[in-house]
Amino acid sequence: LQAIMLAQAQECFVLKATMERTVRNTTLAKLAGATSALYDAARGHVVSCSRFFPSAIASYLGAKSQLYQATAHYRKSMEFLEEKQYGR
Image 1 (spheres, rainbow, N blue to C red):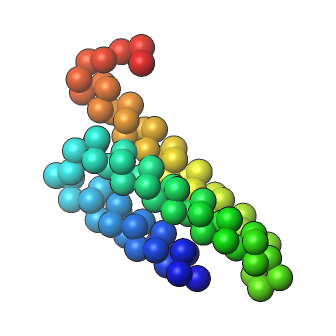
Image 2 (spheres, helix red, strand yellow):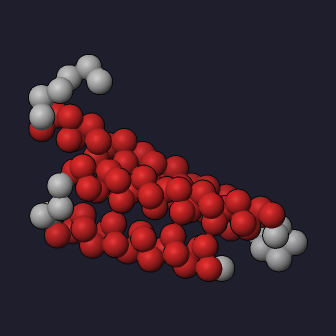
């Protein structure tokens, strides 16, 4: 549960930073990537203790990990677009 709560806390921080619109895309990409890693680690813990958790929780955490990985890629692409670095 600690890993899940840590990932959720990081997610709140990412959402707050996104809503403020003052945080650069570079920073948001790093935050989203870290959030993805935390959700993936939480999924690994849930899978290793699968007898205590329903299988749907592992799937949910995996989806959250992929969502924030996609967000990190999107924010990184926006950074490249702002800097006019095409083809990377």
